[in-house]
Image 1: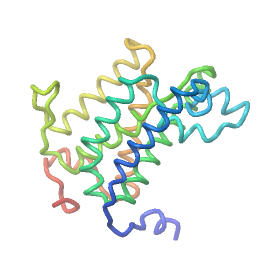
Image 2: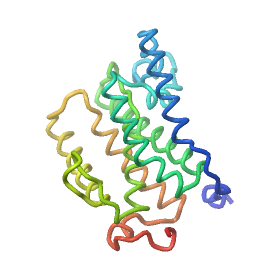
Image 3: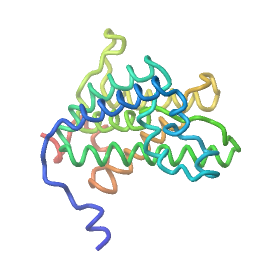
Image 4: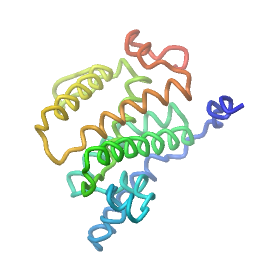
Length: 217
């Protein structure tokens, strides 16, 4: 029974949820500019979650950004990949996928911070959810080529693998402080689990075959 509920599909509809998500991110960014202290309520801070029970931060952190370049690059990624993934998934499924992936990536990061005693760290940004969307794009469009810096063409699955390797290396070497590499990796990981558990799709089959398989066009 619970398994059926977990796998129950939404009726397909397309209602540009991606643009609504971008709009919400922009509204949060404007709020944080007008009232800078609001960041302490909307970002995810382990100490505040455990001491003051700010559990909403597991959701609001993914709509909060540090600066203009942070939100710009995340929203560009959400726009370029999110629109295509939403059209393939349907708006309801895409919204659930986005929120669940982002929430779980934040939850995973929270437990890592707690276990390492990093109670004062500030986690913010849509990157975990956006990385999940990039992963979904690679699953649905494995033949698609993404041009790095507008010059170097790379197939979507190769880009995902490359990003995962880079994030893992950066996490192990701590070569880029202030970047939540584990959250990015968690975005990939939970996106993979979402496809396997809810959608019944093995992303590796798509990556290996270079085509979308029976769930694609």
